[in-house]
Each structure stands twice: as structure tokens, then as C-alpha cells.
Length: 232
Image 1 (cartoon, rainbow, N blue to C red):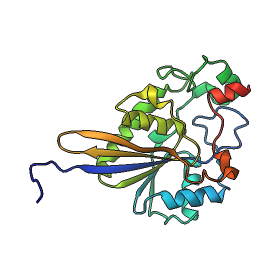
Image 2: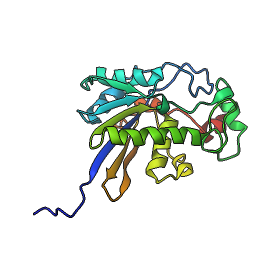
Image 3: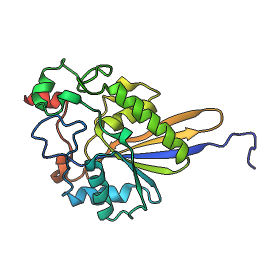
Image 4: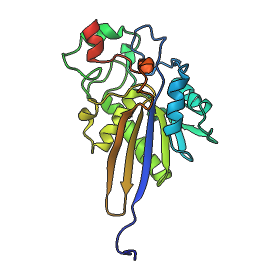
């Protein structure tokens, strides 16, 4: 017997996919620069295509590397959706005048142990802070939670954007979200439970890599942060 006094809970499941590796950055910071990505590793995309749910609604950022990544997933056997909505607010952080700077040299100039380009409240010159990225990601996620309530949402985006979404799922603990690795083409699942009384997030998986058993595909992990500094 159902309990009519118990409020209904609507679950919206987010499947975040980071774009494929960017090989033509020249070792430089690219942020919102609209660079292409490398989708040649079909083994990786075949694995991802098998994991993602069917009958999902698709979103991506406005940058070409997310569109190319989505296309590679569809070509790997995932049924092509009728549409994919481009959301500019799901783009990577605008790193302003830092874009085009040598990544290793820049990371070496930052404080020891830094897990991002700068403190979350420090804007890049002519660009955004990580909090700016977090706030636009949060607004977009909250809007889509209303538009696609109760559905599976596949969002092809960027490392920074996905970390911002994790920060939201951690109840606004933005700094803690930066400690997570988000590798290229990895899947991060965040579930949103909403009822008339309250809403909560759950993190079933972060940075899942369904191809990881084969070492030949390790290049989906690109050096970042302290790893780059160590080699500088």
C-alpha cells in the first residue's frame, strides 16, 4: 500500500562527459579558446557509448571540442539524439590573458600545491574567476533540473565545468571540488533528488573511465596542475 502522505521524489540523473584530449595547444593554456580535440581512439569511445543511458537529453558547451566528442560517441554506436542543446554557460573558464601562456611555466609560478590556475575568487586578467564559472554552471544546472526533471541528462563539457558541478553537488563546497581529477572522456554521474520538501544531490561516480583496464589508452589522462609543475 502506498503512503499518500509521503512526498514524491523526482530523480534527475546527470552524466557529465569531459571532451576528448586537445593535442594542438602547443603546451599552452587554452581555456575558452575554441580548439579541436583528438577523437581517434575508437576503443575509448566504444566503451563510453556502452555506459551512457539511452533516451537521454543531450547538452554541450558552445565549444567545438565538446561537439566533436559527442559526435565520436554517436559514431561509436550510441543512438544519435534528435538534438543536442548548446549552452554557452557550460563552457570552460574564460582564462583571459592567461590563454596562450605556456602551461608548465605558468603552473610553476603559482603557489605550491595549487589545484587550479588560481584561487577560486581570483579572476584571470580579462577573464573569469573559478567562482564565476561555478555560478554560471550552477544557474544552468538548476534551470535544466527544471526543464528535464526526472530524466537522464548527458552533458558534454569541460574539466572546470564538471568540477563546478561537483561543487554544487557538494552543497556549494566549491574549493573541495577542485581536488577531483576529471580526465578526458571520463564520465561523472551526479543525481539530483527533488521533492516538495527538500532537494539533495548524490555522487554515484566521479571520473569513471570504462576503458581503463587497457594501458594502451592511458593518454586520456593529460598532465595538469602539480603534475605539470613537477616536470617544468
